[in-house]
Length: 320
Image (tube, rainbow, N blue to C red; front, side):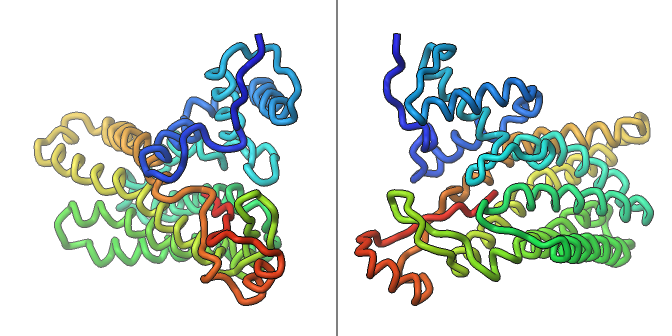
């Protein structure tokens, strides 16, 4: 029995509404996808690519199985290049990786060596994620990669240590919030620098039929700003509500009675927050973003006019 025709080149849920984007990203960022073997990922890639080319996929018997293969494929392969992404750079690895790193940052925020180590770990992880999820047409030199990594790590460490000193004599809850502010500042440094080539040369924009028009710096600025905002929102719930929880437990002497529970509680609660925050904050903006033709550079406007493209907006992959 042949499968009905389904357009799997697009998300299963139409992306014009926040709710549908949230459903889409819940599937893409599902942390269980990191457990998929290379054989399972390669099978999903074969199914998706064969179906798109009109070839038979005899091992798929239902539309639901087809969509499951598509989302498994999208959780591991870059949407522009089709290359398999580094495991810890995939959005499906965000919850397990971030819950561990964030939990440790908030547990050991008072010790200077610990602050240095965990901020370094966090920025190393962020650098991998940002590089892995950049727009597919962009390149980044080793020199730019190194400088952006050093700037983000240095910015996060300086911010964390400065806040620790500033908050030293304040309410304990205020001190517990210093890692969150450090992460905010690091995201504002790390993401634009890691994607500096896109800001310099532009992100490729396409018409409604997917035809390439050319690179736009304005699209890059818009897309990267959206990514910075969504990443800050993604980090905030766990790094805000966990300190509130731990401060309440400290007041009730729970941590004095069970000191070993400090790190596990913070890590698990961060994981709980991130399980929801990751897809819901990715969904703030559509991955295939749009920009008005009127807001593009003059040379692109002229190119669109000459090509007789009637679209009022053009589209680009903003990255995640």
